[in-house]
Image (cartoon, rainbow, N blue to C red):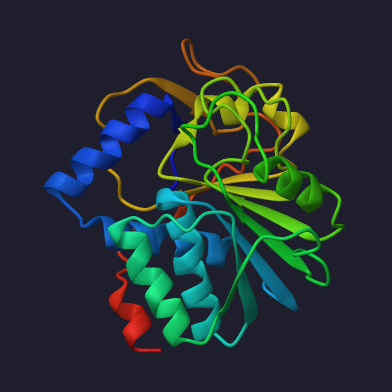
Length: 248
C-alpha cells in the first residue's frame, strides 16, 4: 500500500462514498467488521477495555470491536449512551451478548478501573455542542487516566473543521476509510496524539485533497503537508470478512 499521498476528504464525500460502496460492492456489515478489525490491529490490547458506544454505525463499530476482543481472549465491556441500533449494529450487539460481553448503561464512574477506553460515541456528522449525558461521559473519559482510542473521529469534534467546544482527547484515533479534513487541522492536533487510517475498501466517490506522505520537505503543488500526528501508512483490512468471527 506504499504510496506518496493519502486522500483527505469532506464528511459529505465520505458519507456518499460509504453509501455507494455498500450499494454496489460490499455489505455494510462487512465494512463495519473491517473498521473494528482496523482498530484492533492498530493497538496492543492488555488489561480491561471499556468501549463507550452511542447509536448509529459508530456505536456499531464498538460492538464489532467487542466481538473481536472477546474472540481473542481480551477482557472488555460495553458502556452504552444510547439504545439505538442500526441493522448492522444490532447484528454485532447480539453477537457480543452471545460472547458474554458485559453491557451496561452509562452512569458516572462507568469508566473507572479500566486500562483502555474506546470512544465510539459520535461520528463525523456531529456538529455543535455536546449535551448530557454525552458531555459528562466525554469529560469522564478525558479525566480517567486510561489510554483512549477514538474510532473514526474524536467524539465532539467537527469532521470538516476539527473544531470542538469539548471533545475526547485520544492517544490514538483510527479513522475509517479516508482522512477527514477536520482531523488534520491545527485545532485537531490539540485532541489527537496519533492518527492512523484503516483502509476498509471504500471506493472514493470523488477526489478532493491529497496529503503528501513521501517525507518530502516541500509537498507537490496542490498537495497538503502531512501533520506530525498522522501515520503515513494505512492499516489494510480490505480483504477481511465478518465470517472470521464465526471461526473463533
